Amino acid sequence: MIKLFIIGASSKLARKFIMDNSLKNVSIFGTYHSYDVRKLFKAAEKKNILTKKFLKIDLRKQEDLNRISNILIKFNPDILINFSTIHVKRKKFEKINLDSLKKVFEVNFFSQIKLYLKICKKLNKLKKKVFILNINSKSTLNGGFKIYEYSTSKAATANLLKSLQREYKKIKFINFTIPSVQKTMGKDSISY
Image 1 (cartoon, rainbow, N blue to C red):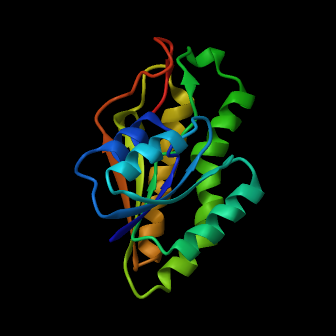
Image 2: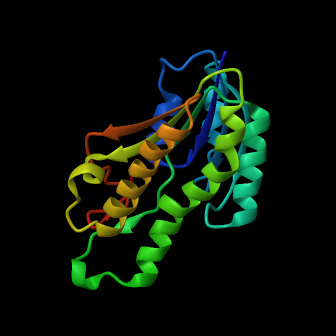
């Protein structure tokens, strides 16, 4: 049985992933913020996906990051998949304000640093290889049209994982790039 730890299970992409028919013989522990995923996981259990628990968290809160790291180490996952992100609205560059930029970076970048500071050393000591997948879009690599906060914060996270790979040999860090933006909040707002 494969053990998956999913951060950001409330994202549209994560929900699609979990409900995929090819996902079998897995045990999932996940976190969510904005969408109550418990209904989704009742449906998943009908498909023989063994769900352990889903925890509502806020990646901007240190106490929630502490809880996640403790649970993650006890769960001992084979794969950690990070779908977490924050919704952004498309806007011209001159309309960006520092508060908005800080909020996006806090979720998409700084929370990842705080989490990896707590778990990497412990995961690297395990007898098995652990995979950490970070989900990005093409805008991470090529820039995005009027989504400056998202593109720059996710690019920073992608580069963080590349750097971590050099230090932690028993953890396989993978930046997984999806081909496009997911429009989920109307024509001027996007979610990944």
